Image 1 (cartoon, rainbow, N blue to C red):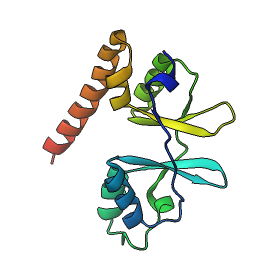
Image 2 (cartoon, rainbow, N blue to C red):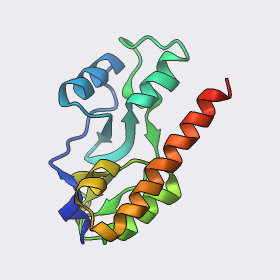
Image 3 (tube, helix red, strand yellow):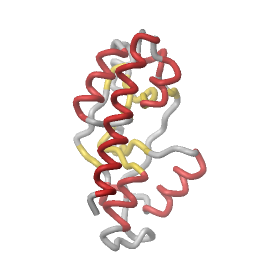
Image 4 (cartoon, rainbow, N blue to C red):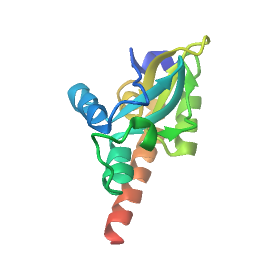
Length: 148
């Protein structure tokens, strides 16, 4: 199975210069937890709801003046739409990430591949791999919350 067959298509990126308030509104309105960040026709980062909570709010940033670029993750992992979904899943596992932007061979973003997409659309033989990714993440967060 190719990534294009499992991904969520038509993802759009946001400007790095929009406020965190606007980022949060876009996430809320689209019912999503992450947004790609682009500038000068290039993908430059990703921002997640967790970034907003843990990097911005926890550090006391003003969501009306702080910008997406201030808390986004740069140097992101991405994949091509014609990559094998198994390779993309392996990359997600290695990097411990839940979402990867999907590019065409012209390096234009065509979608996002998420763990949810994989759970819904990946071949049945891959479900064990996806389940391990989710379980590992859940146990990591559970142990972190009990450590406090």
